[in-house]
Image (cartoon, rainbow, N blue to C red; front, side, top):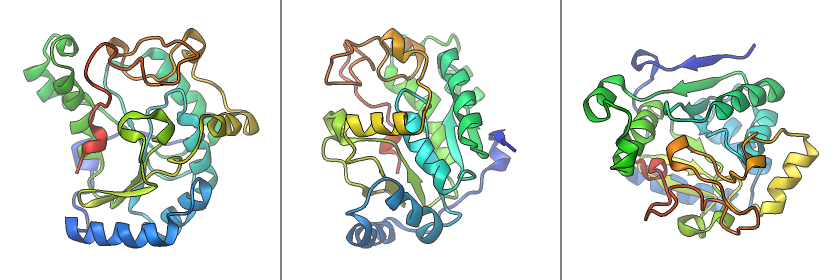
Length: 250
């Protein structure tokens, strides 16, 4: 049975089990033992051995998200998947999420939304994105994810080096404050992602055919030349901003 839960404050298990120093030591140890692995070969020991019950993953259900979701579903379809509903997403993203959840048999989707009190105070008319994208991202993505990650020692992300920018030297295992961040697709090439889609007959995000290569919130996502080497060029186009901030959470 698919469980799609809208997380409330009382649902969140607080506290982690590591200090910053302990996380750094743990990450170094894991990197020495698993740093040569990727994909399912890395996901499996992280989920079942190293962080059993204390690991989650985040997914935007964007254009490439199905790749990691498919691999995770083969390891543990009940792994908690955190989805940040910013209240500014495309309707197509919500429908695509439902399609993937059904097809992959994912049974533990945790929907996290912005704090309504914070939105009322700092973005009452919903137009903050037009004047302060950093604060908008904080209210709608960073702060909700900080709450959602409480109680977990590790989380899986779908970031990849070929996206360039700050992701160009992405390790497969890194620290994020008191947590360990696992990037199973860090070393995957664009064609490797395509292979996952083709071999598993995964559906495409409906907006990809319309020129959206990387999809976030509606106001800050633009179409991109399909031949562009920068798949994230349509995110915050024209601004000195390439990340929403969730990967700086400590």
